[in-house]
Image 1 (cartoon, rainbow, N blue to C red):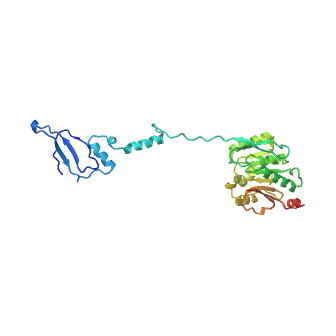
Image 2: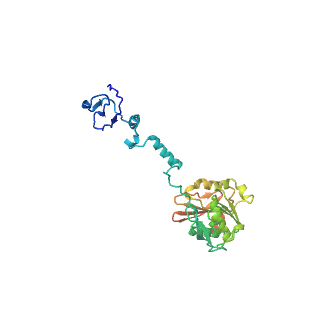
Image 3: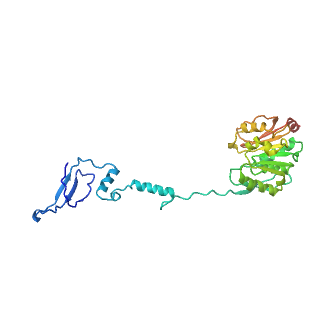
Amino acid sequence: MAVSAISTPVSWRPAGADNNYTLFTHRSLTSTPRLCRRPSSIICSSSLKSPNSTEEKRELLKQYGLDPDEFLSEPTPSKTRRNKDRQKTGRGKQVGPPPEQSKPRETHKLLQVLGGTARRKKLLSPKSMDVRPMMEVVKGAAFGILQAAGGCPTSLRPGRWLDLYSGTGSVGIEAISRGCSQVHFVEMDPWVVSDVLRPNLEWTGFLDNSVIHTVRVETYLDRIKDFAGKDGPFDYISVTPPYMEVDYEILMKQISESSVIGDDSFIVVEYPFRTDMLETCGCLIKIADRRFGRTHLAIYGPTWAQKKRRS
């Protein structure tokens, strides 16, 4: 539809959604006599396509020199992107919450040595649940079985102890207190070694009888000659891993094929409920299997130890 152009200022307002026509009004400033001067109207047909999308509306408003943000409530895409960039980079007024700092790990003294030269001495342990020491009732039962199987109910046979997944070191410290000459502690967590295990050894006076290996148990077993030297198999081995992080079948197979065990060795294994343990481990047989709630305790040893326990 053609509209004649008039070189005069135009004042207008956008039509509402209910109008079928858009109305523009102006006053002609031509040389028309004052008596005949009256407002004239220009009517644009509604057959012209009205802007449907927000972008088309913005373009139409910009063509007439108007600010789209004054008429439309939605912010411009450029401003939206700018606000998101400010949130990401931390610039501007909108800044996200600061990242939470990890809390320092803490310790407490809830464990104690049950028997031997360091009896009743308190031991450090982490307050968190990432390190789970052997329960004292389980530890007491394990050492009672080992002492009876060795033929001396009051103390252990002198020998070397390997404490796998040592954590706080309570099992190895108990072994030294009851008569073992040396204990090798294997613990992969550097903080546990520096803030829990080593202070416990210093407090009990057993640091000179100890060797600490800050490595994974699997690595230690694969490279036993590099860590333990040529001293031969251990007399005692304790296995107290985190229940949900190990496969007991694979772990016990690796131990049975390693040079850490000998014909006269004893192995103490703490394992969870509903875990099947084999009757043998290498050349050793199961001489005891106890249950303490959801915790089970299996002890492997030589054949002569089983006969001595029965007698």
